[in-house]
Length: 170
Image 1 (cartoon, helix red, strand yellow):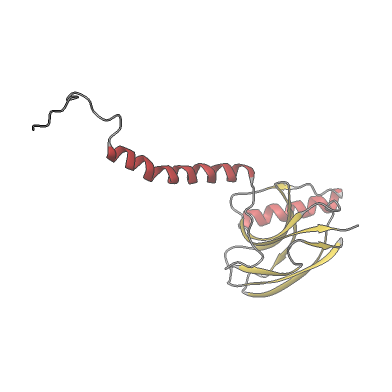
Image 2: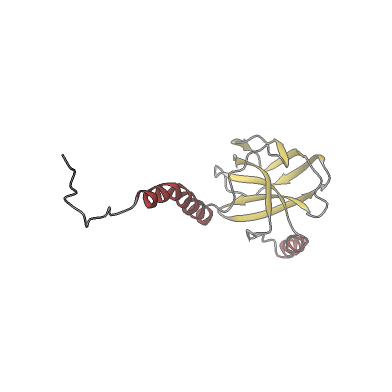
């Protein structure tokens, strides 16, 4: 018995190769779109207290602190080209606190926060450019003159090294 193709002029709606290509590319496109969405709504990443660059030993993550608090940690490599600063970050704005040593090793600082009570904020160690450092110094000077310290916008040039989330108790 001879086989006869009853539908000689029909072709599949999508070739197997095209379908396989679509299946292979979809996860990549989805991950790319998700990354863009996250970057649009999350100004700083959710970095840990212990990274390859630095560690914050105290205060610990998700702890309650007083208005006057101490921060201590360790930088794991030299940052000779990039000044290092401790900042508080809340709602997409940063509040510079103090510079720390650019050399690898332990550091500590005694700080004060004006953050609202019972609201989470982050203590972040960042590496900045010399231009960012100049902006911070001008911000400190203006704040001392006016008594006002408005939040600064985040800059693409700032690199987050380590962070902890805390809140102030009253």
